[in-house]
Length: 249
Image (tube, rainbow, N blue to C red; front, side):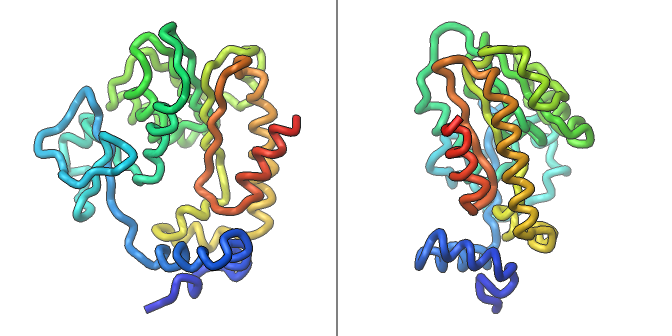
């Protein structure tokens, strides 16, 4: 059996150990394990016979004992649930901890495809809140439209714009979610292509792009509003350093 570090780029393992110290061994070991299968239920279309094992931080999150062929399940096509990694469902806990107004709120999911966070926000927001679900990459737009349509959310607008094109909407959004394009380190356990495509140069490229995205979208956030930034990477260059850069400006 391979060890957690055997199939990973040496420079990735080195940076992980520098960031986490002895704790890195737990993460490297976890990368050897099979990724659990989880779904998030649609509160307006709850399917019968719901799985029993719950995701601790998400009331509508469920673990499955095995991965079925989802495309053969009518409930999947009807939008009764969304297939999503449990870690991404932490968005719901973040949302519940944020202060909210009784008045209608305006929300932007800037990097929305394929729709995991947008369908989640759609289930959490008030019926009169506005959700703008945006995707800049045209090839990913159709899957976002399909998933949002299946989910059946109201007061949702799907857009295809570069972050800079939102700048005329000065201080417009109460909440902006930026699940930024990244080097994909969080995909290593289930996607061998993510490993082969990773490099230190790619990390640096993604970090520069993430900084540009935050700089472009910042003017659209209301004073007193909240911007929630996330990636599926572990390195500080794409995470803490990006946030520090935004705060310094």
